[in-house]
Length: 391
Image (cartoon, rainbow, N blue to C red):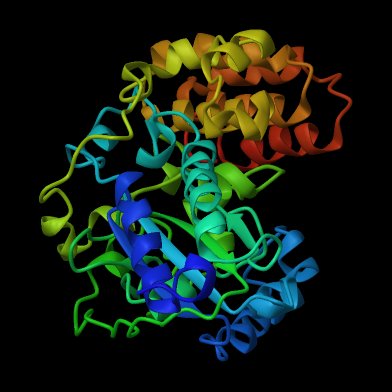
């Protein structure tokens, strides 16, 4: 099992990596060769050419590097692909019926998974490199979601699962609830057998999407995806999609939660990624009162913090507008004077949905001096659609 100078053979190196990954709590693991996903690049280019990436400008900017691991690191030979189960203890869609509360995606209810997984990967790498080869001979790089690496096709190539019709990775053992991480190395390691598609005729994930973000199985139009609309989109959520967002204020779990393979996700699972209690069913009224300092404190170490207060309040106000709860109108009205036009515009929309026509008309007159063009357009569109009804 050992080669010259006591260093590991490729087979032993693979086994050692797997043992280290298990010690760090990873639930799924496999090796993919660096050249294992030749079709992924062209598919990505086609998706970008269709404009389905929306305003995620980093997608076309990194498309060439993203197309193949070697485009990012020429010396890469193999990738250890790792999965960490974050399956929830309950159906995350239950909160959608509680319209005065906000639904935060399961992955974002606790601390930022990027930091948690990156720490695990670094510990694996620091123990692996000295055993794998002479000083300077073995190199590794660790990745968690933020680098231009196509983790899902690589994870399928490594045998962790397959990309389902919702385009996310599905595991026969863990369902649709896997965080992915990768350790790339210049060592050529024995590769695992790629997983095959087990979706069959099922279309549960496609039918579960509130906004029709899947034009066809295995295709997603990010511009209609609630996760994109509430996280990546910098401007106002398109008016026609706002009612469909419901009370989802950060991400959306509907397509993941609908996957029948989730029935296996909790088997043997230890709870490693605990949700913060305050993020399970937060009241919209409470969230609407957050100033910038309170927002940063409330979501410290959380992925929610990355979108900033303005985008977050945009989401909260859209949810308030969808709540049907007139008692929340006061929370929205406070934001007509917010410093950020994105927040003011969302407040206008929310109020147009909650207030009687006469009250909304009086507010519109009071704010006739609004200077921002986008906010003025929100007032105009609300009026055109019939105040206090649909807008």
